[in-house]
Image (cartoon, rainbow, N blue to C red; front, side):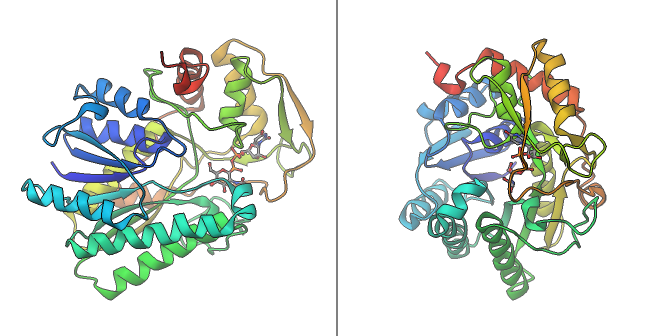
Length: 357
Ligand code: UD1
């Protein structure tokens, strides 16, 4: 059992990972500014895990919540100090908090660099002050830009093509420098996610983007539930078998298990820095997603092919062999599982967490 600080733990990937970590017996302190997430998600996590609700938790409960900012150093200092005062210092940090919309990062680079890079730096500084050196970082396949070949191994060139990608690359660079500076201390995992989708099979927690979704899956599920009329398919003339882009979609519960496995590995093995792809190795086209979701929801998904979206690559698929070798981890869920669970969430919560009474 470890005591883990989870930044951004109320968000989509964070909430599912919190559930997996609670089920594995860990104790969590979540810090989240709720800018793109809801405390309802953590209360549902608590109920699924059978622990006290995060919003009412006291210092001895297994899921505690602090509304705060990763750039707010006094807030982070207070979290570490309180845990030390209780005789249970923070053993590790899993860092999800950050901004992730590509278009927004082009319009607001200062904000993206501030939150994603400066935020990570201040968090690491507080960890170092308190002798905490175990860190799992939310990285992204966006690092690879337009990949030279697929499937993409971790040794592929890091060549981001937008400010969001540069902030992830900069944070990974920082982590590499830190690990090199004190190899006997730091235990770091940079987890490069491919396309996280789906939901917990209970339908209690899932993805709840603010406003109009940028990403394919939430858009498709909002069309299925009647919140949006028609999906635009960005390009039907890509060099792929059906002309639509191919991605490596990974069930969010597989991704959550990947974090648990990475943390176990860091805590058990000697200090090291791991950079790992978390993907399935399976390529799925946009039209295949639409068809599978229509089958799972038993509803048509009206869609129209429009022009390509600037910045898209034709095919992005992980080579996940290294994660299997280092963590013994691989994805377990099919596209059908992803659509079934995604639909369970969307149909039970048509307005996301705002459906909460
Ligand atoms: C996007 C980001 C990536 C980020 C990831 C986070 C871009 C270019 N890339 O990945 O940096 O890490 O989200 O999850 O924004 N599509 C449609 N119609 C839609 C939405 C998407 O046809 O309304 C297509 C896209 O063209 C793409 C596929 O669906 O081919 C997947 O798109 P999306 O879910 O946005 O993910 P990525 O672009 O792979």
